[in-house]
Length: 328
Image 1 (tube, rainbow, N blue to C red):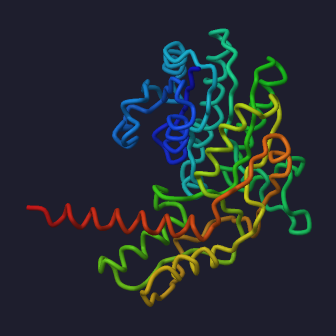
Image 2: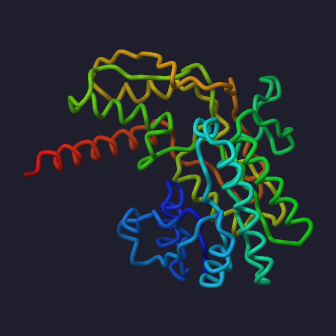
Image 3: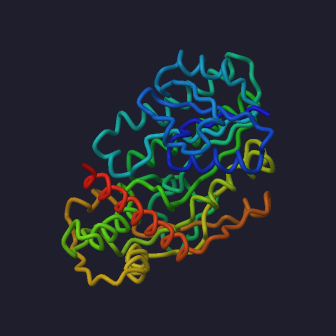
């Protein structure tokens, strides 16, 4: 079995590669990486993964990568992945997420391949769903409110169109928020955890900068999410779309409180206007009932454990940074 993961050096990509190394030892794992990606971020599994360079916006490079990997399964995870930055560079986000996927799917068609393709879409496609219509289900209308959400809706619809028009075996996953160790600090829970770890280490004053704490989200552990990717590839219905989410709404304030409860520091919480979004979704959570029925998937890691693991990871990172700064 030959597997290609686009975005393999990203947050979820690395966890997915680790899962496959552990559970699918017969798989030959290929990873599509940008020129500026470093294989070292894959850690101990780096020698077990074959990397091929290519940018999603470079159609000839995508063809070269596909010829090299000749995949039986494609996990398409690579993307411009943050809502906040999409307001700054909307054209780039659309180019990477929508046009980049067209290049990937067209490359597969051009080479007359027929892999199972799992596309990482997003719960952001639902936008500001009225609260009496929550949780969002797969038939909830798409109404994104950010350039990122629009780009993921385009990705979602393009995947459906290619599945229908060309009988491609594509499974779409609408992923809601997920976090865990190694999450970059530009994402909210990881930003909080990093700030707490730096306060504990005396690297910053006892004050946390926050945005809107009253928004409600649906938060999963990344280690549960990558199990969902594999189950989608092996048990999902081609052409189908599935929500991947916990189904449990949680405020960002609750996320912060849980992280602070794992620290002995007394911390001031201050709203930073720069962290407030131009347009935000007040509340969004989903139902994963369809995916559960199709694959048996259930989130297994409670949010309390996820956040504690995230904080402990940042504590180790901060200690490592301090050790390096003190080295002669």
